Length: 187
Image (cartoon, rainbow, N blue to C red; front, top):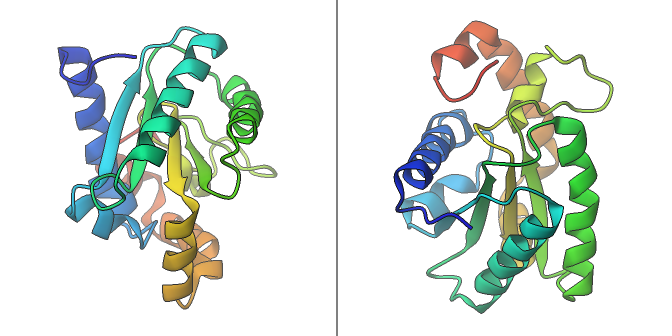
Protein backbone atom coordinates (compact mmCIF):
# COMPACT_ATOMS: atom_id res chain seq x y z
CA UNK A 1 0.00 0.00 0.00
CA UNK A 2 1.43 3.35 -0.99
CA UNK A 3 1.19 6.27 1.33
CA UNK A 4 -1.00 8.89 -0.32
CA UNK A 5 1.26 11.53 1.20
CA UNK A 6 4.20 10.55 -1.03
CA UNK A 7 4.64 12.55 -4.21
CA UNK A 8 3.53 9.61 -6.37
CA UNK A 9 0.60 8.77 -4.10
CA UNK A 10 -0.46 12.41 -3.92
CA UNK A 11 -0.40 12.63 -7.72
CA UNK A 12 -2.60 9.52 -8.05
CA UNK A 13 -5.10 10.95 -5.56
CA UNK A 14 -5.07 14.36 -7.29
CA UNK A 15 -5.63 12.75 -10.70
CA UNK A 16 -8.47 10.64 -9.34
CA UNK A 17 -10.06 13.56 -7.50
CA UNK A 18 -9.93 15.63 -10.71
CA UNK A 19 -11.64 12.78 -12.60
CA UNK A 20 -14.27 12.49 -9.88
CA UNK A 21 -14.97 16.24 -9.89
CA UNK A 22 -14.90 16.84 -13.65
CA UNK A 23 -16.32 13.61 -15.05
CA UNK A 24 -18.28 11.69 -12.42
CA UNK A 25 -19.74 14.75 -10.66
CA UNK A 26 -19.32 17.33 -13.42
CA UNK A 27 -21.17 15.22 -15.98
CA UNK A 28 -23.52 13.82 -13.32
CA UNK A 29 -22.53 10.26 -14.23
CA UNK A 30 -23.30 9.30 -10.64
CA UNK A 31 -25.96 11.50 -9.06
CA UNK A 32 -24.97 10.16 -5.62
CA UNK A 33 -21.28 11.14 -5.76
CA UNK A 34 -21.60 14.88 -5.23
CA UNK A 35 -22.92 14.72 -1.67
CA UNK A 36 -20.32 12.28 -0.33
CA UNK A 37 -17.55 14.20 -2.08
CA UNK A 38 -18.76 17.55 -0.68
CA UNK A 39 -18.91 16.06 2.83
CA UNK A 40 -15.38 14.66 2.53
CA UNK A 41 -16.62 11.09 2.96
CA UNK A 42 -14.64 9.60 0.06
CA UNK A 43 -11.48 7.81 1.16
CA UNK A 44 -8.69 7.62 -1.44
CA UNK A 45 -6.31 4.67 -1.07
CA UNK A 46 -3.37 4.01 -3.36
CA UNK A 47 -2.14 0.45 -3.83
CA UNK A 48 1.32 -0.16 -5.24
CA UNK A 49 0.72 -3.93 -5.23
CA UNK A 50 2.56 -5.69 -8.02
CA UNK A 51 0.25 -8.70 -8.21
CA UNK A 52 -2.98 -10.31 -7.12
CA UNK A 53 -1.74 -11.55 -3.74
CA UNK A 54 -0.48 -8.14 -2.60
CA UNK A 55 -3.57 -6.46 -4.02
CA UNK A 56 -5.76 -8.93 -2.14
CA UNK A 57 -4.07 -7.92 1.13
CA UNK A 58 -4.62 -4.22 0.31
CA UNK A 59 -8.24 -4.89 -0.61
CA UNK A 60 -8.88 -6.78 2.64
CA UNK A 61 -7.33 -3.92 4.63
CA UNK A 62 -9.44 -1.30 2.87
CA UNK A 63 -12.62 -3.37 3.24
CA UNK A 64 -11.92 -3.81 6.95
CA UNK A 65 -11.21 -0.09 7.38
CA UNK A 66 -14.41 0.86 5.55
CA UNK A 67 -16.57 -1.52 7.58
CA UNK A 68 -15.08 -0.23 10.86
CA UNK A 69 -15.31 3.45 9.92
CA UNK A 70 -18.19 5.69 10.88
CA UNK A 71 -20.20 6.23 7.66
CA UNK A 72 -20.39 9.92 8.54
CA UNK A 73 -16.61 10.02 8.22
CA UNK A 74 -15.98 7.43 5.49
CA UNK A 75 -18.88 6.52 3.24
CA UNK A 76 -16.93 4.98 0.39
CA UNK A 77 -13.41 4.08 -0.71
CA UNK A 78 -11.64 4.42 -4.05
CA UNK A 79 -8.72 1.99 -4.22
CA UNK A 80 -6.45 3.08 -7.06
CA UNK A 81 -3.89 0.62 -8.46
CA UNK A 82 -0.58 1.95 -9.74
CA UNK A 83 1.53 -1.11 -10.47
CA UNK A 84 -0.78 -3.89 -11.59
CA UNK A 85 -3.88 -4.73 -13.65
CA UNK A 86 -3.02 -2.23 -16.39
CA UNK A 87 -4.59 -4.51 -19.00
CA UNK A 88 -8.39 -4.39 -18.89
CA UNK A 89 -8.73 -8.15 -19.47
CA UNK A 90 -6.63 -8.92 -16.40
CA UNK A 91 -8.46 -6.25 -14.38
CA UNK A 92 -11.79 -7.85 -15.34
CA UNK A 93 -10.49 -11.26 -14.28
CA UNK A 94 -9.39 -9.82 -10.94
CA UNK A 95 -12.91 -8.54 -10.27
CA UNK A 96 -13.98 -12.17 -9.79
CA UNK A 97 -11.20 -12.59 -7.22
CA UNK A 98 -12.33 -9.39 -5.48
CA UNK A 99 -15.86 -10.79 -5.27
CA UNK A 100 -14.47 -14.01 -3.75
CA UNK A 101 -12.64 -11.91 -1.15
CA UNK A 102 -15.92 -10.12 -0.32
CA UNK A 103 -17.64 -13.48 0.10
CA UNK A 104 -14.82 -14.94 2.20
CA UNK A 105 -15.04 -11.93 4.55
CA UNK A 106 -18.82 -12.27 4.79
CA UNK A 107 -19.32 -8.83 3.25
CA UNK A 108 -21.67 -9.72 0.39
CA UNK A 109 -24.79 -7.69 0.98
CA UNK A 110 -22.82 -5.18 3.06
CA UNK A 111 -20.24 -3.92 0.57
CA UNK A 112 -20.61 -3.58 -3.18
CA UNK A 113 -17.76 -3.30 -5.68
CA UNK A 114 -17.81 -1.02 -8.69
CA UNK A 115 -14.96 -0.89 -11.19
CA UNK A 116 -13.23 1.75 -13.28
CA UNK A 117 -10.26 1.44 -15.61
CA UNK A 118 -8.45 3.59 -18.20
CA UNK A 119 -9.33 1.00 -20.88
CA UNK A 120 -12.81 0.10 -19.61
CA UNK A 121 -14.91 -1.58 -22.26
CA UNK A 122 -18.50 -2.76 -21.90
CA UNK A 123 -19.43 -6.07 -23.48
CA UNK A 124 -20.67 -5.68 -27.05
CA UNK A 125 -19.02 -2.29 -27.57
CA UNK A 126 -16.03 -1.36 -29.65
CA UNK A 127 -12.90 -0.17 -27.90
CA UNK A 128 -13.47 3.36 -29.26
CA UNK A 129 -17.15 3.57 -28.28
CA UNK A 130 -17.47 6.79 -26.29
CA UNK A 131 -19.99 5.08 -23.96
CA UNK A 132 -17.06 3.17 -22.42
CA UNK A 133 -15.82 6.46 -20.98
CA UNK A 134 -18.57 6.38 -18.34
CA UNK A 135 -16.33 3.89 -16.51
CA UNK A 136 -12.90 5.12 -17.59
CA UNK A 137 -10.68 6.48 -14.85
CA UNK A 138 -7.06 7.60 -14.66
CA UNK A 139 -5.99 4.36 -12.90
CA UNK A 140 -7.45 0.89 -12.46
CA UNK A 141 -9.81 1.53 -9.54
CA UNK A 142 -11.94 -0.57 -7.23
CA UNK A 143 -14.79 1.41 -5.71
CA UNK A 144 -15.96 0.02 -2.37
CA UNK A 145 -19.49 1.11 -1.51
CA UNK A 146 -21.68 0.47 1.50
CA UNK A 147 -24.67 -1.53 0.26
CA UNK A 148 -27.06 0.27 2.65
CA UNK A 149 -25.99 3.63 1.19
CA UNK A 150 -26.46 2.40 -2.36
CA UNK A 151 -29.94 1.14 -1.50
CA UNK A 152 -30.90 4.45 0.16
CA UNK A 153 -29.56 6.48 -2.74
CA UNK A 154 -31.38 4.38 -5.33
CA UNK A 155 -34.65 4.63 -3.39
CA UNK A 156 -34.30 8.42 -3.24
CA UNK A 157 -33.50 8.78 -6.95
CA UNK A 158 -36.61 8.26 -9.08
CA UNK A 159 -34.75 7.29 -12.27
CA UNK A 160 -31.99 5.13 -10.78
CA UNK A 161 -32.59 2.30 -13.24
CA UNK A 162 -32.07 4.73 -16.11
CA UNK A 163 -28.66 6.06 -14.96
CA UNK A 164 -26.76 3.69 -17.25
CA UNK A 165 -28.70 4.82 -20.35
CA UNK A 166 -28.56 8.49 -19.34
CA UNK A 167 -24.79 8.24 -18.94
CA UNK A 168 -24.39 6.75 -22.40
CA UNK A 169 -26.51 9.55 -23.86
CA UNK A 170 -24.39 12.11 -22.00
CA UNK A 171 -21.19 10.61 -23.39
CA UNK A 172 -22.52 10.49 -26.93
CA UNK A 173 -23.57 14.15 -26.74
CA UNK A 174 -20.19 15.07 -25.28
CA UNK A 175 -18.25 13.09 -27.88
CA UNK A 176 -14.55 12.20 -27.90
CA UNK A 177 -13.42 15.83 -28.21
CA UNK A 178 -15.55 16.90 -25.25
CA UNK A 179 -14.29 13.97 -23.18
CA UNK A 180 -10.69 14.78 -24.05
CA UNK A 181 -11.27 18.44 -23.12
CA UNK A 182 -12.09 17.39 -19.55
CA UNK A 183 -8.44 16.39 -19.15
CA UNK A 184 -9.18 13.41 -16.94
CA UNK A 185 -8.23 10.29 -18.96
CA UNK A 186 -7.56 9.39 -22.53
CA UNK A 187 -10.66 8.96 -24.73
